[in-house]
Image (cartoon, rainbow, N blue to C red; front, side):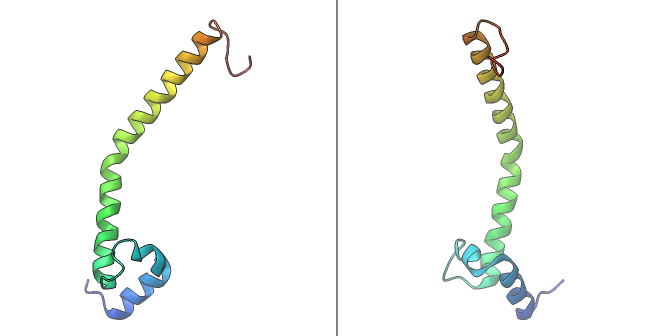
Amino acid sequence: MIMTQKDFAEIQTFLSSTRLNTYGQNLPVKKQLKEYRRNIKLCRDFYPELDFFEVTLRNAIDTALTSFVNGADWMTT
């Protein structure tokens, strides 16, 4: 699908110029959108590692707090 200038203008309206400008204030909207999509793909690629880190950290905090209250339920202690 070939996007027209009108298509880019509509996308810019939906996403906001402020948001797109973070991907290159002096770039044309087409290049800003390319960088925006690249950023989405990068975030998507990191999500499994971030998810693993979050679960591991949460479990480590739970283990430490449970130990701190001598095995009691730290959420109700």
